[in-house]
Image 1 (cartoon, rainbow, N blue to C red):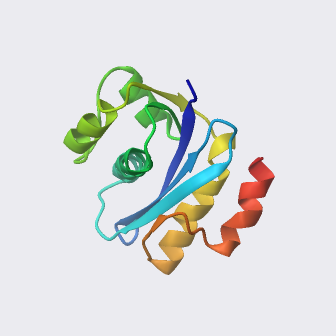
Image 2: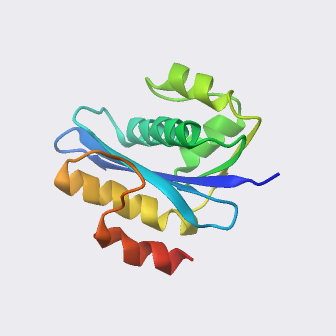
Image 3: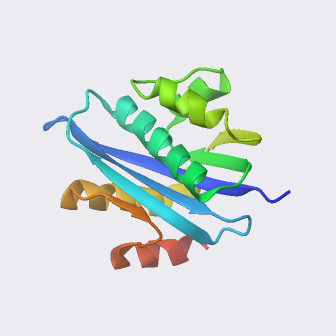
Length: 148
């Protein structure tokens, strides 16, 4: 059994009520396989942005494949909610459906593992773009290699 990891993070702009997500899907050795990011024009709060990051990350992992997954998030609220069996924000139904599709899945709180996902979310907030797949903006490559 090879366990993949999924690093997720979000940014939230309280003044403009918008946010962004970043997700990095890694193989069992920590090598990056794919990434995605999403700009979200309308959000209520940072917790909702983190829930969207979870949803987008889970959908990326589902798209790439694999049955064993460890999700790593720096948002303690999302981690604790999932550890207690619940989901947050409007993406709850989608998260639940995708979450239950994995043979083995867990979540853990980690700030160190999320440097690239954090940088991806912040870059997305600035550029307001959406990327899905294996293309990573060059600005993030230095962050990726620093986490190895």
